[in-house]
Image (cartoon, rainbow, N blue to C red):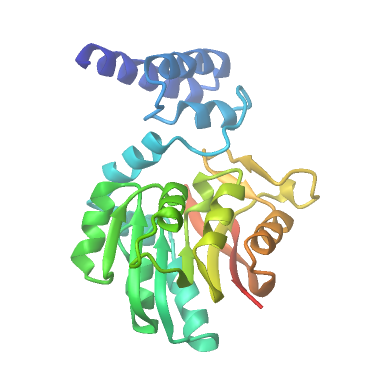
Length: 276
């Protein structure tokens, strides 16, 4: 195992060096070597290949990659996200909800809860809050905030599927479902929004954020991998997914700066949708 781990680290670091030097063919060969060494793709080689145009885009980032990425940064995540990256989506969502649709809401589901920023912002609007994140160390940080009544380590789609099918009387549907900074790690959104549909009350409200790219504005593509190894989605696709999940009433569809990347703003959307 140690030899494989060392070989994977060597191949990945060499691939990064070639990519930064503009040697895409050499980088691609090494990223493919990473995938051969680690089919679970903890280092995100498939996303790297797609971002360079040297491989097909996966329908989502590998679970092992997302969990590893966020576990690595759990300790200083808030400082990085809200400081260097200028991330403020939970605050923006909470500000709009408190001013426009304050509830109160019975049950909140925070998908991709991370360290609990959304939970902290929304706890006063909800009687009960459930948080879910794929990264165990992020969930531990969220637990320290005491903003949630229940926390789970799970991938979002898996959680939604298991919750809907469990038969547990405590597994009730949710009145407010929030997914901020989740869509950038999922390309094809149908499974996620089908899961949301199965776990929402009849009058639920949905809050999501997404990154986008100018190339998606013409409607030829629903989603793509960005140069920064995340997923971007078109506005039309997001509206279609909201309707698919039974949230056709778009209350807010606001262009925002989702975050900064090397100091440059990353455009996206903040969306709030309701059931009729």
